[in-house]
Amino acid sequence: MTWLGASGNPRDTVIVYDNAAGTPKPGGGTLGTSGSATTTLRPDGFTARGITFANDWLRTDLPGTGGTQAVALKVQGDRSAFTHCRFLGHQDTLYADTLSLGTFARQYFAHCYVEGDVDVVFGRATAVFAHCHFRTLLRPDLTGAPYGFVFAPSTAGANPRGYLVTGSRISSEAPDGFYKLARPWVPSSDPTARPMLTVRETHLGAGIDAVAPYTDMSSGHPWQEQRFAEYRNTGPGAVITVPENRPQLGRAEAASHTPKAHLGDWRPR
Image 1 (tube, rainbow, N blue to C red):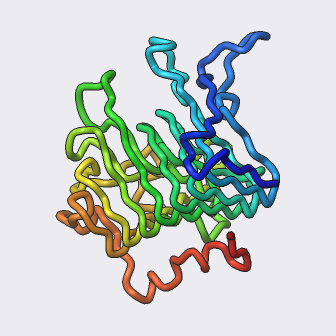
Image 2 (cartoon, rainbow, N blue to C red):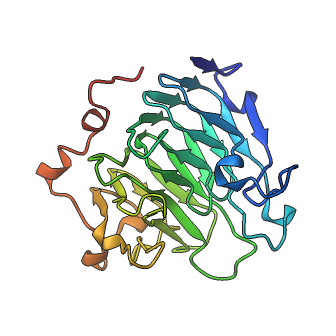
């Protein structure tokens, strides 16, 4: 299945709604994170080009709630490809996931724009982000750092490939150092998860905390025990001031952290 935007500009084709995890359901209870998604895509082999997926729910819409997750897109299928698309939201904008714990799903995002604040991209897919722009937002509801986290992978322990970000850039509306690059998500449904993220040859703007770009999401699962690494990143957010806080790949290691290695026999077009 392929979805094509009305023009070459993703701003001209927008799929948008405004549910959040804490939004009440008609029959009682609340929607939850997955239920908040504006769009959920489960089939294998899905492609989209030139489309905006958005969730325009705001925290002021439901003041005092703990359910502020508001997903723009949840994608679970293998061989899912998105080119020249936009993903707009705040918390949990892009849910790059799989259909089940035992299922691996390869996903490819090229020349895309993603914005949000908390766990902007999260989930357990094997996902490649090539030449994408990630933008972190202001948080008028907060007065101090951190405002949020760009990535929150939850890669299954048995999966040798998690998130790969290559040739991309991360910018921010927030003050310098107010965002973390990532934190590991080890969900209660998969306590053996070993989140994996490689960011390589990517420009990290000043919004990223260069001293301590990673942090823990929950006790018992420190980020240092997960699979986080960088390679030849640039920009003020990539400056290595405390080496133990920024695991770096060597040239030989980096050779196995490529789109081709992540995607295997699949070559998205």
